[in-house]
Image (cartoon, rainbow, N blue to C red; front, side):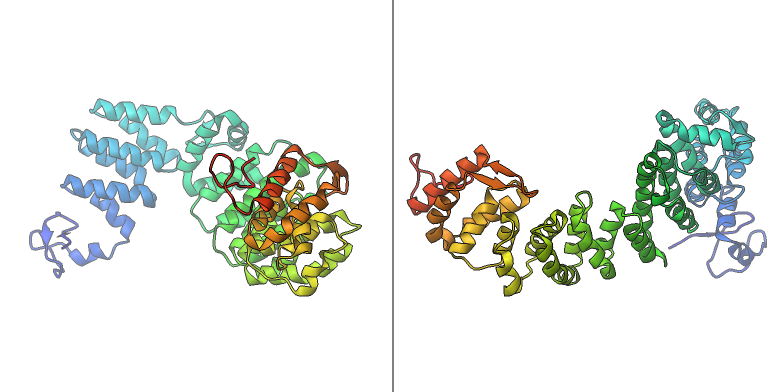
Length: 453
C-alpha cells in the first residue's frame, strides 16, 4: 500500500484525509499540483529513500528548475555522499545551460570530497566554447565536425536533451558536405531525441537537396546522409511515414527505403521493388522486401516476368531481374504458371535453370538445372545442386553430365564464354559417379555426396 505524507510537515497521513492532523495543512492542495512539482517538493522529504526516488524520476523528466533543486538537496544533506553522487549522476543527464552550470558550481565546495570532485569533473567536461552554459553555433559546428571527438559531442548533445534539437537542425540546414560523417552524426543525434518534432527535422533533411541536383561528390555523400534519415524515420510511427518511404525509394533510391517497404508492408511499392531487381546495388534488398510482402510481392513479380523473359535474350538488365525474380519466387514457395516455367527454352542457361526449378523432374529439367549448377551465380548454383540431389532426378543425371561435358565453355550471366571452373568440374565428376553408383557407399564406407569435393 502506498504511504501518503503531508506536503508541509511530511507527517504520515491517511489516504482519505484532506487536512494534516499534525499541522492542519491542506493535503489535497498538495496532491493537485503537477507531478514534476510534487517531485521537486519531495527532494525536501526527511526520508532518504523518498528523496532518492524523486532524484531518479526528475532526471528522467528534466523539468525546469531541477538542477538548482538538486544542488539545494545535496547541500541540505552534506553528510549523505551517496545521495550527493546520485545527484551528480542526475545532473549529468540534464541539459547544459546557465542554470545547470550555476547549480554544479555550487557543489564544487560540497563537504563530501567525492561530491566536490565529481562536480568539478562535470564542469571540466563542458566543451570549449561554452557561452553561458550553451554552445555557440560556431563551436557546435566545430564539435560535430571533429570526427575524432564524436564521443564527447555525443555525451554533450545527449545531456542537452531537447535543447539540442534546434542547434542540430541549424547545422543540418547548412547543406551537403564532401565528407558525410558530420551530417550522419548530426542526424543520428537528432533521431535520439525523444520529441515528436524530431520527425520534422528528419523530413527536412530528406526532402532538401534532391540527389539528382547535386554534383557527383556531394551526391555520393548526401546519399549516405539521407539513407541514415530514412533508417531512423522509418523506425517511428507517424502519419507521413509511408509517403516518405515511397519518396525515398522512387526518387532517391535509398537502400533503407527498400528495406522499410518490406518491413512496413507497403504493397503499393511492389512494382518499384521488382524494377529494382535490375539494380546490382539494391537487388538483394529489393528481393528481401518482396519476400516480406508475401503474396503481394509474388503477384508483382509474376506480373512483370513475361516482359522480363521476352527482353532477356538481348537486354542484360532484364536477364538479371528475371533471374532474381525467379529465385525470389522460389524462396517464397510460389508456383509458376506452366506457360512461364516452360518458357526457359531458348533463354540464357541461368534463366532456363531458374525456370526449371518450377518444373517436374525430367530429362529437359535435369539438363537445365545442371547448367545452373555449374554457373557463377552462387545463389542459383546452390538451389540447382540441392534440387539435383532429389531421387527423382537420378535417371537423367548421367545423360545430363555427358551432355554438358560436350560443351567445354559456358556463358556467364553477361554472355561471355568461359571454361568451367575446377570446382564445377570436380562437382560434375562426383555427380556422374553418384548417378552410376545408385547410392552405394564409396571406398571408405561413407555415402557419396556431390558436395564432398
